[in-house]
Length: 353
Image 1: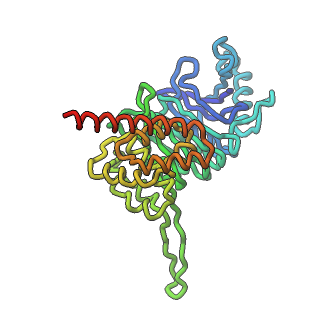
Image 2: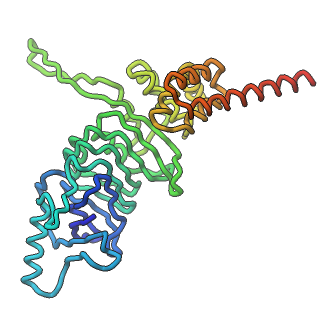
Image 3: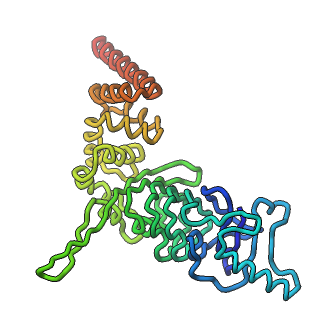
């Protein structure tokens, strides 16, 4: 990857990226200085605002050898020509060697560095193929319209410890489609999974009154408001279950439920029972969710749980057979056998006593 950037008081601000891979992983540092900011319109098709200050160029593929860097060289005229060239490249479709700008529809996934604190306005404007975002809890300042036009965003990985606060609320507010958020600690272990359903607003014209009224469809806006300030409220999230249960398809509801049962952060006992009761009657949906996400750990967890009745397990087996999923069938049959063995041993022990 090749980058145009500027210096800031507390680090580096990336202004434009060039490369061939739409799965972008921005560097933690450039020449020993942390990346702390992303400029406005960074991945947008058009750069409509130019940041003041000197520009620099880094070729990260050659950085270890100390090459690919343009900066101050002592020749004032040459430096000015270099600055003009770099300013022009901010708006160019490609570098002189043909390396294309990473912008617009070319961007598919974006992993942000851990020391990043700020992202400028419209940095991902109209990146219509962007599906995955990864960022850290240090990120606090988001520019306006950051994800405008990012209609395919579906997954978010957030690196932070339990109890920390970050800008998740602002990120969710920018995106109205169904979002799956995984919380990851410093060891790389997932400690929570949350699903935020889709929602949209519709303007309804009241001609006699000469007014427009706004109608909200879907329960996604309710889930996105499960915050107190920047702190996420798990109990508020769980209280919203009746809304998603009647407004969304069972498969999506099951996905949300399984995320809470597998990672029960601040999950109260009464809400846990409600989730377990729902799951026990949706064996088919559990198999479909596990298969779609290619997550056999989810299937093992559900099938081995005490709330998974014989009928629920048989539903999973039947669905697995219909889908021709040999791996899932093997897992489920092993668990069914183990459950029967455990039940037999318990019955034998009770008889002996």
